[in-house]
Image (cartoon, rainbow, N blue to C red):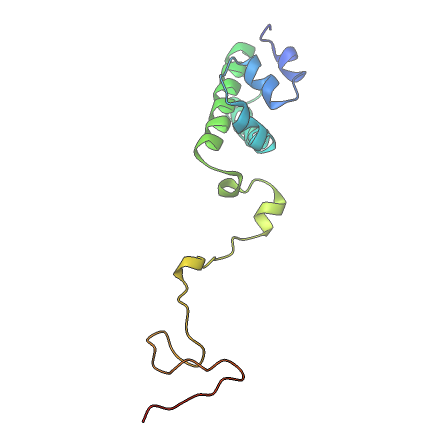
Amino acid sequence: MTRTLAAFRRLSTAEEYLEFFDIPYDPAVVNVNRLHILKRFAGYMEQVDAAAGPEDTDAERRLERYREALLRAYRDFLAGTALDYRLFKVLKEHAPVALVPLSSLALTPAGGDAAGGAAAAAPEGAERRDAR
């Protein structure tokens, strides 16, 4: 594939961009994170364009910077997850909820405390004998 800005502008999928720039990738990572990678790449491209300015018309240099931006976006999702970056509105609006692991909970007998301060209640219908 010829690397021109015109060819670059015809690309649409994450795989097409990665293949255009000859970036090796793990299909499993792309399948899970494709929209996030593309969104992150778009943000990095905006930074490249802003830094270059309108007077920079060197297409080859621009494409090399876009390649670096795509590689950076892809690597972001090798090291992190969509929840780490929260690029989309739905993820930004829903803050993480603190979770308490089930394994950290201690079982307490009915009517007593975890230290066993009170005797467990007798099952319904059973007589309870007090030790005197």
